[in-house]
Image (cartoon, rainbow, N blue to C red; front, top):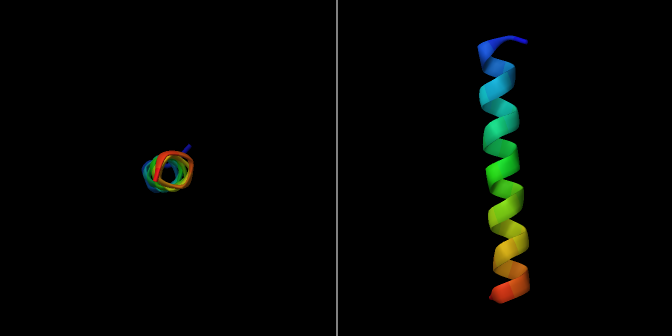
Length: 26
């Protein structure tokens, strides 16, 4: 896996988690 891929997936995962948390607890 390339570094860019890892960073992109990590950022996407964090963004999704934040979005879901915001909707669930917002």
